[in-house]
Length: 119
Ligand SMILES: N=c1c2ncn([C@@H]3O[C@H](COP(=O)(O)OP(=O)(O)OP(=O)(O)O)[C@@H](O)[C@H]3O)c2ncn1[C@@H]1O[C@H](COP(=O)(O)O)[C@@H](O)[C@H]1O
Image (tube, rainbow, N blue to C red; front, side, top):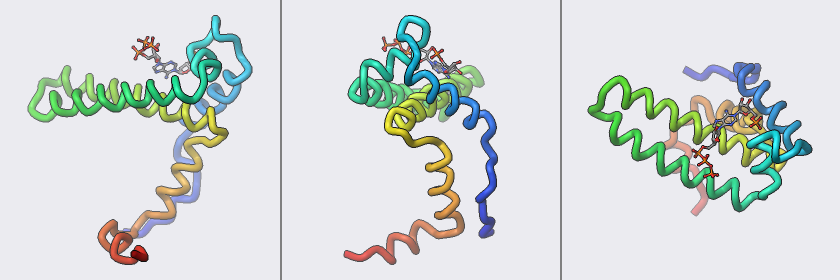
């Protein structure tokens, strides 16, 4: 199926992105996101790396695991998404840029795309 995905399907992400943007000028004492923005890109990237590792460990546990382990994977994935959204916001990008890129790729087989790359 080759469905164009140009409309907005992510109201939660829209609202969160607006909060993350506002936090760029908020006080670190009042806001975890503001504290990350103030600590800078390296700290944000450290958190993304930590959350990525925690997500893959949770995925291994979830593969043959209990409902609780599957829910733990959902929770870790949410942490990872959240911190990547903070990263994008810090660099004045957002989820919509990523969704637009995924929509652009929609229907293009990964095998075909790879074969069309110039060496
Ligand atoms: N979705 C989230 C969200 N997900 C995870 N987290 C926080 O991410 C942090 C990371 O957890 P960890 O245990 O890995 O980190 P830690 O050990 O506490 O931190 P470090 O000392 O290692 O840096 C925790 O403090 C979580 O509470 C989040 N913090 C905020 N949000 C959203 O962002 C909004 C703004 O948050 P504030 O800026 O804090 O108001 C909130 O209303 C939420 O919608």
